[in-house]
Amino acid sequence: GFYESREWKALRYKVLKKYGAKCQCCGRSYKEHGIAIHIDHIMPRSLYPHLELEESNLQVLCDDCNIGKSNVDNSSWR
Image (cartoon, rainbow, N blue to C red; front, side, top):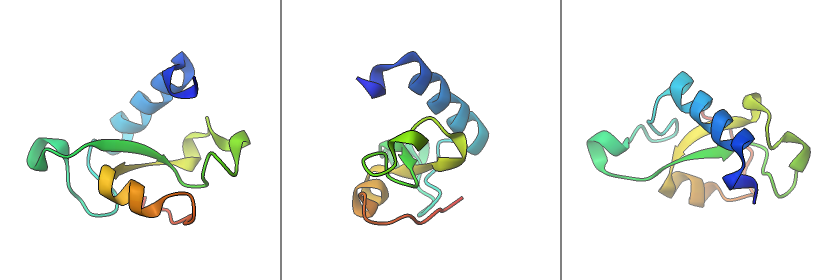
């Protein structure tokens, strides 16, 4: 699937390296808080599949913020 693709994994790594592994919404991190970190599609992949590999459409969110955002919010926390 998409999340197992080499293209996604390389882009995910690039975004983590650029922004760090810290939630851009609430500020929590795995290192300090032991929470899961996600790379979120600002414009949801389910609604905008053509943007799925666009770095400008990605942000770092923790599990709670990403699940809370779901695919109904297009907020950018960068």
